[in-house]
Amino acid sequence: MTLRQRDDGRLRTLLAQECARIMAEEGVKDFGLAKRKAAERLGVTNHARMPGNDEIEQALLEYQRLFKSSRQPEQLRSLRLIAVQAMRFLQRFRPRLVGSVLHGSAGAHSDVNLHIFADTPEEVMLFLMEQGIPFESSQRRLRYGKGDPVTRPVLSFSADGVAIELTVFPPKAEREAPRSPVDGKPMKRAGLAAVEALLREPA
Image (tube, rainbow, N blue to C red; front, side, top):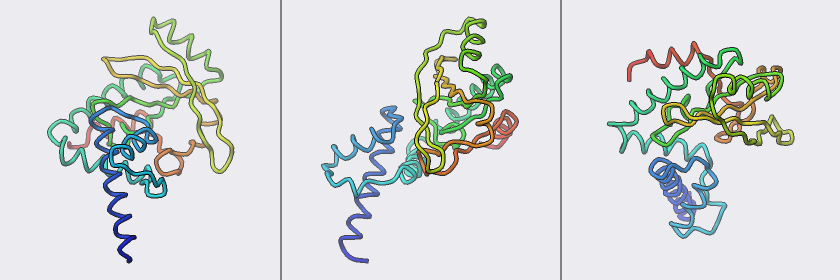
């Protein structure tokens, strides 16, 4: 390995660690924004040296192990409990937990992200309105395989001070998960029973 390769490797590690710190301490959830902030703070202009999202997530897990070990496990458990409550509430839409609360990298600033399935987004909106739950709507771009991005509706509401984000898919999309922004592989999804099992695991 050449000196430059070693230097580039160290820089990628430093950038990944700074991204992890930004996400853990400042509540930044978007990998791209964390990269831009880290590059600016470290004076890096060569984007080829930026770490991948998977490297950042690994650095985030390590950061929490080193600096948040007294609080993060309980925060994660609390978020998973809220996820279970939300999934029971939304059971008719066959909810699946995705993202940092499932993977274990979630912290104090994390949202609970659920994939739900309905014939139309309006069906979910009507359900939330009937339950008296105020929500906001937005959209999210997702990618399947090597195809073009698709846009899915997102409905957001708050439970116990935690943001719950529901990405609404048509029923047929239950068979194929979109690609993860972390590693480009199909997103891991967990049903209610699997999340309840996570809560039974020792901390």
